[in-house]
Length: 234
Length: 191
Image (cartoon, rainbow over all chains, first blue to last red; front, side, top):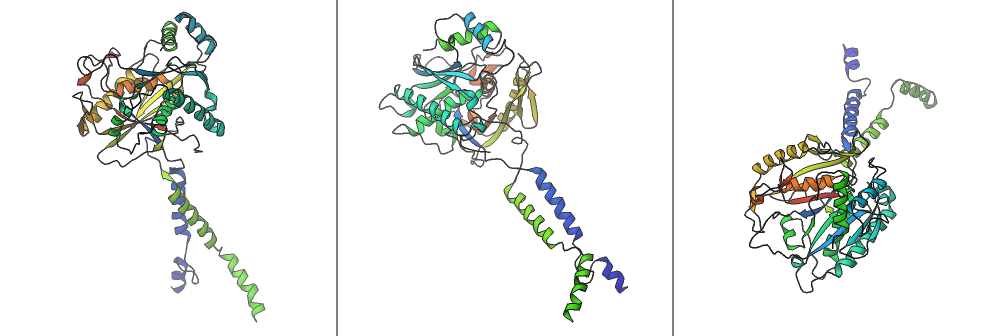
């Protein structure tokens, strides 16, 4: 009897740790499999318009806007060509519309000189080069936006900023422009808008929007028309 | 005496492995994963490479009175060699078909349900629209086509008649979501 009791759980003064190790191993496997190591997600806020298509009293017909245009970079992606010529150039840039991603883009404010952005650099693995490219875009847009300041007006009375990005480009180009405008509003203005987290506070900030789609039929001719409009935007 | 007993004790220990160091290590590992790891929730579990932005702020999960809804827009190659996209909200995945509008219609149907359940407030821009106290977080892949994110914004503001994909004639009778967070990362973030 005495021998049996010792064999079941206690062996010469030792605890049987095997069941506990089993449980701990199971817990460990659970946590190893289900946990994910990721950086805390961050966000940039936006307030979408609710007055699309609105007409009548209360809406000024001559709203002044600052247009930021983003389109593929190429020597032929400049003013002076016809939509069909832009379409042909686009076909060349995308390797006969085979889905090749356009990485080099022009970004332009109003009718100012554009800068060329290298999209390949805007990836995580590029590290310092990406930081420098983001900084360059912010610097350009900040300098240009200063020229469109309405002195003495509060931030929400400044000219609206509208981002016109060619629909076939990557989302990151439009977002980097949005980020640069918000950065300019927050840091480079005397009464810069300070965001505390309440979405409704964006009513006090300058209106920055993404232009609605120009086309929904993405055939060659329509894409040429879209490019023509963006490249000739004032 | 002691020199004669010592080899005997060593021999006895060979029968019972000393598990204490192993348990120590396993406990340390367990603590590490419990404290440092975060359980992934379904909406954020999708690996999306969001674009960089300097003005990024930490997502405020606990803004009083506000709900958060997450829309993922992931770039996935379509079968024909072009860039495709999949829109997902909650557990519902909606692959985008070239030229198709079904994904947007399904997204709008889900958004309508969220709108109906949400608490509302008056649009401060005096458009007579009731706005939901919902922040929509758009987790769009930096390499997703801009046109996809553009259309998702149109669907969110309910400014489209999705049957014809033309702007609605009665924009003030829609169910718009206007408070958006675009998920981004800081350029210097390593993760």
